[in-house]
Amino acid sequence: MAINTNMPGRMCNPGHPGEILRELYLRPLGIAITRAAEALGVTRKHMSSVVNGHAPISPELALRLALALATEPEFWLNLQAQHDLWQARNKPGRPKIRRLVKTAA
Image 1 (cartoon, rainbow, N blue to C red):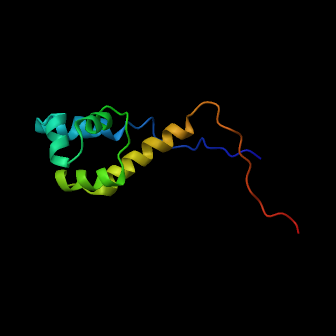
Image 2 (image 1 turned 30 degrees about the vertical axis):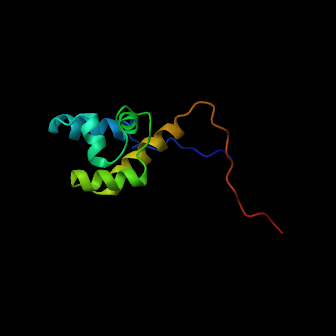
Image 3 (image 1 turned 45 degrees about the vertical axis):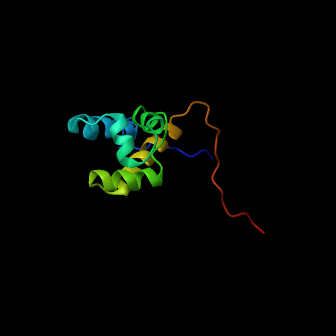
């Protein structure tokens, strides 16, 4: 028995949380990647990778962002989880999965 993962009400492809960081926080505040990296205590390369959607927001970075931007770390982690889950659900060539059921002894 295959599991149907096409449930109504599913979100379209959620953007990478780095895009949200860039568009809703850094750009409106006029903060460049280098300045953000310095303020967060991460490398410019890492900050650039996150902002450009090439690296995920880790729990550690979520804590740093929360402190720097007066948000909650759960906000950033939830954005990352939504993005990752959408990517996994829509990955081509997913294997067929069968439900695990109790077998007779």
